[in-house]
Image 1 (tube, rainbow, N blue to C red):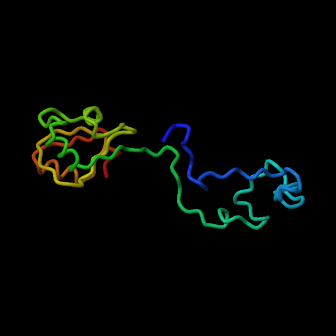
Image 2: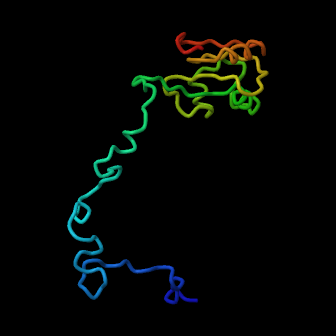
Image 3: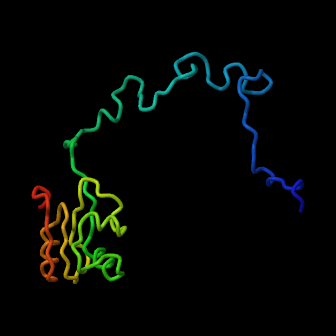
Length: 157
């Protein structure tokens, strides 16, 4: 086998059909687009258009409301915090802040703040300082003998 003997498998590559190249090609003149009409012309993009009938996206009911200034929190589960403490990536003796969580790699970016949820087992005695936390997360940390401080009061629920 030499470099000049390399070939693709037969039938693996197929030449593109050249349209509009004379009657003998089988795709000449109108190039398979039919005669006249919007779709025979160039520059037509009519996705979702249903010929004047009310389009599906307009027929379906709209529900709810999307808040334009909604806060997006980075979510951390207590089980993961425990795992990082066990792996010595987080120091349980020092206060664990949002910046410490980002530095350890547990949170990729803070976004509008870090919110702690109670999923997973938690047994370390730590001082956590975050933007938000669930009630069950606060209980779980205090049950383990630690403290969870929430800096923004509006984030708790």
